[in-house]
Image (tube, rainbow, N blue to C red):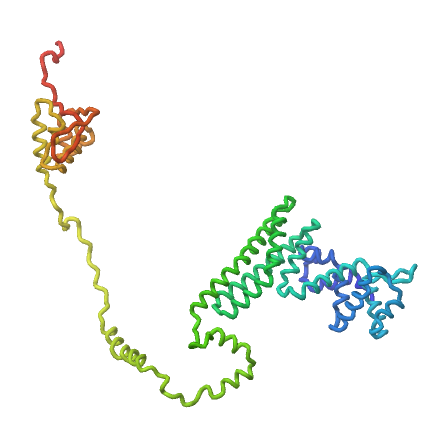
Length: 437
């Protein structure tokens, strides 16, 4: 058997693509074409039945395990693998040699594992090592990422694979919590415990990767996303414990036996289908006996059907007709009592001498005095004078308000202190004020 020619491989790959599309134009195909020799080696190893694959790996691993003397003569190979049928052994060795997993040195007449074969052996050895205690694959992916970071050959694909696996685990854990099943939550918590160490180790690796200044922006964002996914996974333990506490609060205890409904479910899960079928024998009898009926519940249902349902149907729930909105003319309006304003306006209009502010504010109570003080601010205001009404009449009075920066006791029971000041009426005209003709 000879290696596949590159042109033949391209032709076969081209046959599976649509017309007008070249394999070299596809970015996703380029890394596969570049690693064609390595993929061809794996094809030579894993093509065929399971027995053939195991035999090839056994022979290759045996030849690669002798570190002190890596070269093998044909006789040494036959002696070392004497338990393999000779014809099969020779066929496999020749296949490994044809696919460049083994090299033959014509000078020394010995076989040696090729660099390509060493790569294949290292990859298979790593996979087999992590297969024992890494069912979720997180340990292998984390180890690959740590190795790439250690030698300075970090691949975005490794970060992407780790992020995808973390996202899958997080989704599985979230669905276990949403199910509300104690069995699924405990199983998910056990899975989290099995990958906890790998997540913590991966967190340290990703932190070193994110702190590196040599990363391109896309890979740096991917590393940050992996870090966030790892943090979310580490917080999942608290979520599991909180949900288990909720389930424990609603657990039903079976009398005084110390057993709970969860113990019963766990025991039933441990039984086989045949054992469950045996326990189900004679569990139900036909016809069903009437004692399972609850008379109080039956009376409540009958009362609703006979009375409440009929009362609800007879109840008038129609909405009344809409009414038109009343106009403002129809709204009741209270007329303002302007007597205090008009009376005070008359007093101020009759002033001929200055009037102290405390005397001007003197009223029957505090409210009236405060009302008068608020109106004094309108004196001489042009905007208020331009309006119509009693307030505008007050604003048009020819009075001047003088306020001093000190407080005095007005002698009023309702007012403690008030600003000193006075109201000045207009001065009368004198002959001196008349301009010369």
